[in-house]
Image (cartoon, one colour):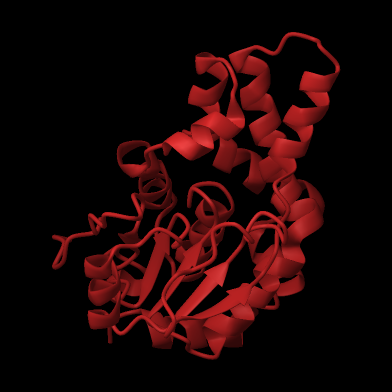
Length: 250
């Protein structure tokens, strides 16, 4: 299916703002364009950025950042309603503990910490994703889902949404990996991390193994994805049909 709109919106103050539309979903029906967006945080948008988001009719943002994490970079668009669904950044806590231990950390070990953080999305944060789907069923679109970088918590959330709409797994992974093309680390965040380049490179990118770790946790804890949708996320057959009606082309 050819894209009808640009998928990546090149904003000045947000680098990873993308449309989830256009992907073939259930029965070949495309995900509706200009309804579901994903992004990094929205605190540094320019006046032109804000005008563009208003032209899209964007009214709701679902912020997956931790409680304290979001305080310094709140959404700067007054007419967007922000819904906080906090997922604390487990990877940063794990890194802090490792650094304090003074045991050297390799890029491979950092990648495994990232995979652990994705497993944690399922094991300790399913409640937040359940709340997100409840909002989606209320039809808050056009809407944007974001965290700090728009790659991990947001990446898993959007993978779940695309799965719910019947998008094929290779396409879901392809969308997830687009972060490696569009995300750029700002100077302030780089200074905050203050880590060796090889460690930072892992933290600011995504790998298909990260996303796979989350779905491994789904299978380990729930048996399969369908059970996770029904029992963990509150999205049974009836709710799936509602999502398809709202977010797939007729």
